[in-house]
Amino acid sequence: MVIREIKNSDAENLASLTYQVENSSQYMLWEAGERVNQAENYLKLIERIRREINSVILVAEKENQLVGYVCAFGGSAKRNKHSAYIVIGILKGFRGQGLGSKLFNELEHWAKHHNIRRLELTVVTENEPALSLYKNKGFKIEGAKRKALYIESEFVDEYYMSKLL
Image (tube, rainbow, N blue to C red; front, side, top):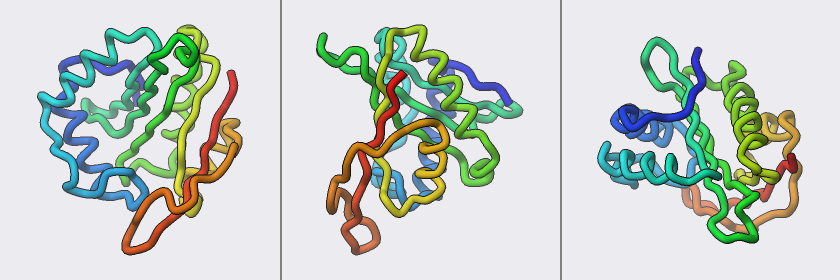
């Protein structure tokens, strides 16, 4: 398993990975088929992220296939450039095997070398595997967003979580 920064040539594979993750997880923001996963859209995203010194997409690759990702979107104002919002996705067959921890370890290493002092994310309160991962990686619950999402005909809450580096 290799974890590395994304390259422009990964756009098509990232589009496919994102589609597969959204189709196999009930807790991602975008529902299956809701987003247009076209390679050219991902190429634009990758190019933009690579130009920003406080943002990154790290991918996990196994046998030339992308199997997971973690994105850090850095703040755009002078006052929040030290902070990054995190999104993570892992293929269903690779969940629960420590890949999330490895992605977060690499992300923290990257963050410390890019003057990021705060990592933050949101997570559905019922998403026990994700909550366990985030807590194990040192994230703390800061608060709750009540009825933040509408999933399967029900409003659900999300936690705000962060880790200070």
